[in-house]
Length: 85
Image 1 (spheres, helix red, strand yellow):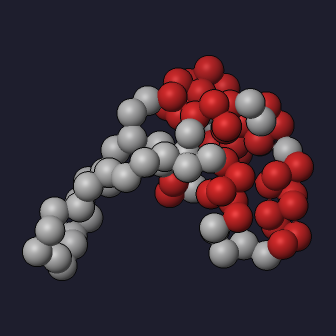
Image 2 (cartoon, rainbow, N blue to C red):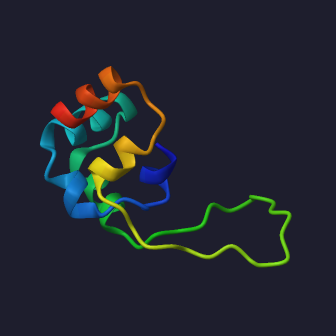
């Protein structure tokens, strides 16, 4: 969810999954068109985060929806469910 919030996932790989977008829209109570517009916006760094580093955090490239799910630490069953939406 954090990657969706921060728009780290390639938007076309999310919006092509209408079942997933529909479920997120219903769960959040937001209209589908607003949700899709959010996903298509530019990536952002979360505000209010504190970093202990000599280097300022920077945005990295976006990843596909499938890559985000596979790298999420979810169980195989949970991954299959999300990728099946």
